Length: 77
Image (cartoon, rainbow, N blue to C red; front, side, top):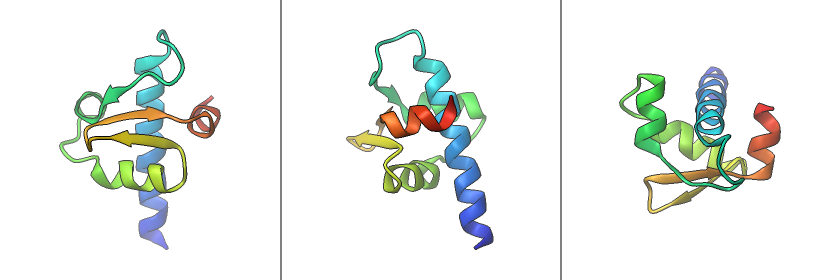
């Protein structure tokens, strides 16, 4: 349970940074996980990406690019 809370917090932070990075682009724009991780000051965001994707908050392409779904955008508004 505590790990789920931590994973949830990291995923939501990831979503927030991804949303800010793409807010001036068209909805559904892709961003690299590296760019988001760099903005967060983290080396590894794989767990956050998997957690968010499993909940339908992100779509993942090629393991290195993500975009927020409508559910993900609504979560960080």
